Image (cartoon, rainbow, N blue to C red; front, side, top):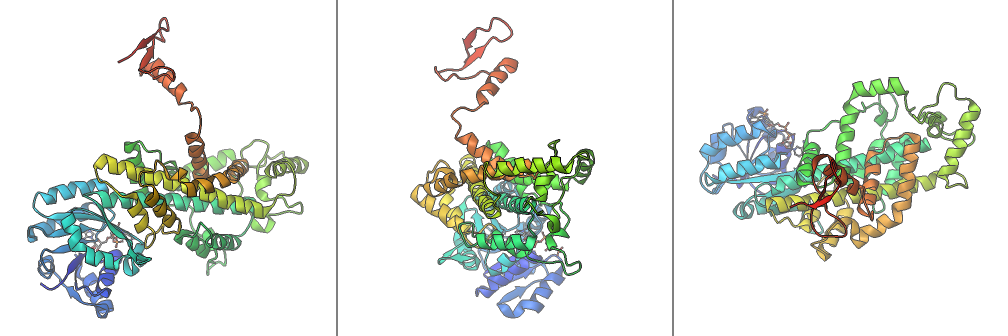
Length: 526
Ligand code: NDP
């Protein structure tokens, strides 16, 4: 046995992870169910480091130094269990099985329990960064025992992305902690992408600008506090032209967003934990809505189409955009057949004046700045919600997650990497028991400065019929948190009325019930 560590499952991710390990000077054993993937790795990249290839799982296990550390990088779900079942009879006490796939943390908790009964350490390890990250330095979120982490650390910390000399890799807690954090990471990624997509849609719909121009806006934003991998990538893809048609590439792609399930898991877990992660939930539902093509077609037929902006005619002589025209009398976001040109001009004048706050010209640059502020404020909300979920999950499962460490290892390597995460790290360093990120001074200042712009953007979106579920729900969350009184009081009264669910009063201790069906006398309920 001479390999430091093994990797089985050599599709895109496993192959690149194995290469990354070899490039960092560790001898890596490699195996794949279908041998061709293993041999092609050795043929194509065998010169990058020290690989030990095996055709059989037995030879693979035998080629690794004890206590063995084996990374399983196969399709999540049943395939992971199948591989674990194959490995276990070949392992010795204190060996370590690492599941680096996108497992559900509940499965990880189950697997860890089953393997620990056999004296084997099971590690759920979240890996983010896609195929490039796996090769060049991902963000690595590790769960499991201290024994396992001590054995893995020299390898995993060396292959992770490094920011200011600190690896984007940490032992976050026992059993499912690593996969839970990876799941929430992906949920936040959904929200981040949805907010970016809404910003693009608003800039295009309201200003009538072409994707290439919007690319420039994102490029500029990337120079400020929104600087992130996803904003940079957005600038890049919006500037891309389809070679076959010469059209903006974003226009030739089917507008039904897919998902593999981590967003859904995040929302399901948040419901279980009772944490309102509205930004992530809206982002997940927005993907679902986009895929409901039958309902979309039926709605377009019944209510008319919200016209896509034709950039060539986007701005007429009066500087009025198609989106402004698009708001008809019926409020459905399309001009009625009997709309006259004068009616439309009147609509537009009113509408535009509202946008200007009653005076002055509509200023596209000011609107663009507003969208930037709204994006930032909504992003703060999405992260505040995601970190709330981390805290709640940690409490529920006894993981003792260090939120500052999570922010630290998300600064590089992963899809949501951003300078923003360095601010979050600093905030938790100053105040580890912070109630919500939203009120940390750095973020509260930015949100307070941006709140008027946020309202203008959501108003413009509503008036133009441009869907902005993540922007709107984030603003509603913000307003919900800071309300002196919420209508939840009315909900409590209704619950007590139809189901005797009781309520508490603002002026007295205790739990009460009113006899709604009878004399309406109030009694103390215990
Ligand atoms: P896939 O998810 O496409 O899985 C393919 C691999 O799984 C192949 O090596 C395949 O072997 C193996 N496999 C499938 N079923 C079995 C089985 N029953 N027994 C043994 N091996 C099996 O590969 P990816 O590289 O895309 O992803 C690997 C893992 O990493 C997944 O869990 C994924 O969710 C996760 N991940 C992926 C990211 C990405 O960007 N793609 C990012 C982060 C995590 P064979 O060649 O024999 O078919």
